[in-house]
Image 1 (cartoon, helix red, strand yellow):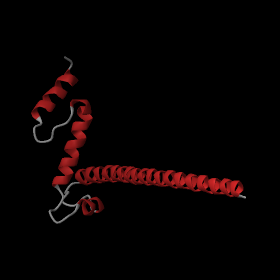
Image 2 (cartoon, rainbow, N blue to C red):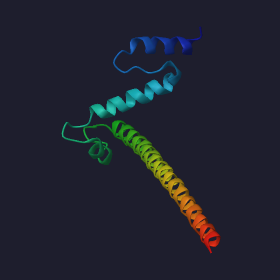
Image 3 (cartoon, rainbow, N blue to C red):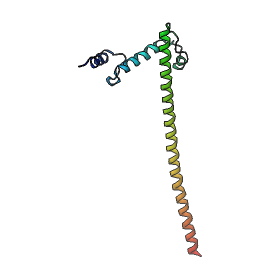
Image 4 (cartoon, helix red, strand yellow):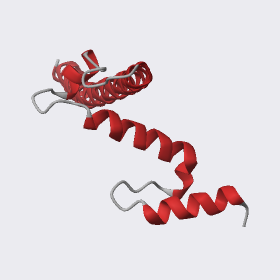
Length: 127
């Protein structure tokens, strides 16, 4: 077993509080730990949005502040992606609902046209 695989196995087994899927790799572990560290800096009275707007709160060194800004940017971009995905899902649901309404309306119109044709035929037959 190579060293990287060994280290992946070791951190995966030892990380009980913040499990990372083995396929996330070492990058996933670093990212998850960085986000956990940044979240630990958030004051209790801050919402996630407040913290994203003021990411360097409770950071003392320049390195901490730069890391906090990077994490905040990454999470903001992720939240934007999720927001867009949610909007797309809502749009898809709206389109599906509109399609169903159009299908029902089309069926109703077809019935009305059929009745109108039958009325015309019956009038011709009667006269």
